Image (tube, rainbow, N blue to C red; front, side, top):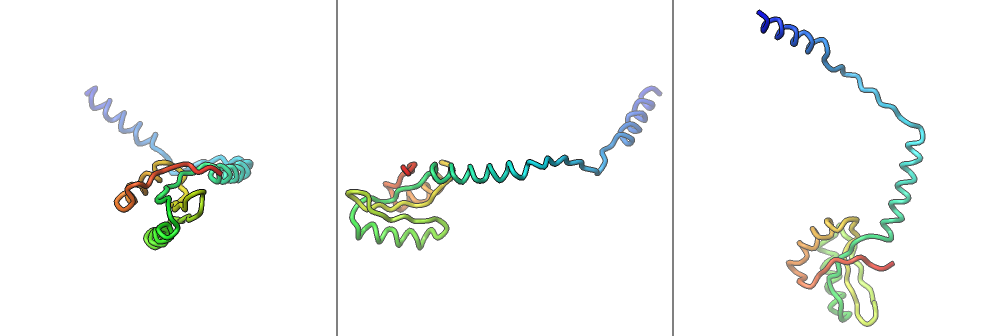
Length: 122
């Protein structure tokens, strides 16, 4: 008898104390301004600190052909081809995290064995 009363009591409490479908959100007015400031700061930090992948360093003709090949294959990433004394360099992408750069490097290593990740000096 006691077990039945306990079970009935627990069921009654469960039904009467169930969750409601109302959600109360408290919004602070300064939240928008803080988020805008954070976006600006993040952009400034990203311009200075990002990871890139260097695919080639050497002669102009080879670098130019590699640059064209990579820009056709990896349309979503930006390819940088420029002269840095004494070699021409081909670099790919601007990645926020090293993990993203490593994922792309794994794909690139199939064709470019000497490719590596680095943080460019700005």
